[in-house]
Length: 300
Image (tube, rainbow, N blue to C red):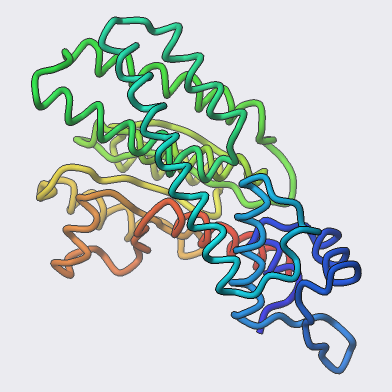
């Protein structure tokens, strides 16, 4: 069973909205503990996530509150299919602009999508697929390294601008440090997770790629984050990276959690070579859920 604070973190629905939905529309009926506090089941959380997804797609709660689980799933799925088609048209527009070096148009398209979407959907459904599509075009010889670098610079500029606008450097939310270790030059993963953390008002310390573990350890000692988030892309990872991961894990206090994602981290996880201090991040959604749980524990 989940408390209302946990449900708020897992669904993104505020406590005030949850109570209003229960009172006005009887969307769910949580049980109460012996002190009268609401407790929600896993089924309640899944239903609330479906309702939240439908509302993000433009439906009003008054129109969907009485729908059962199957009806909500069908509604959300139908519109997600439409969204996929819309996304494909968007990708064509963006990639056409990139091929013609129309970087102002690329930036406009990225900003328009950001305004229209929540940060998780923007990162997962727009930026991540674009990264793969741009990489595929480069491998196929359809764009140059210069165009790929311009794309990366454009995304980095927009994401870090949003991070600076959204997140404070003080407050009760946990601090998260983002970096990659020496030899890992790809920073897309830590950029996207930084955006998600900032959207939850965490204090984000974005250091960037290709950092010696000693420098990262020194920074964490001074900044004292709750979590260090890393990314490892190259597969198979080098023995040098594995040594750095082990050194960082050994020297970092256990009060600081170590999270890592990316293909290189997946390889180490599957080979059972990832140092046990590290929590492997399966996806952006997994990062978002771990972050929500971290925030809830911090508020308890």
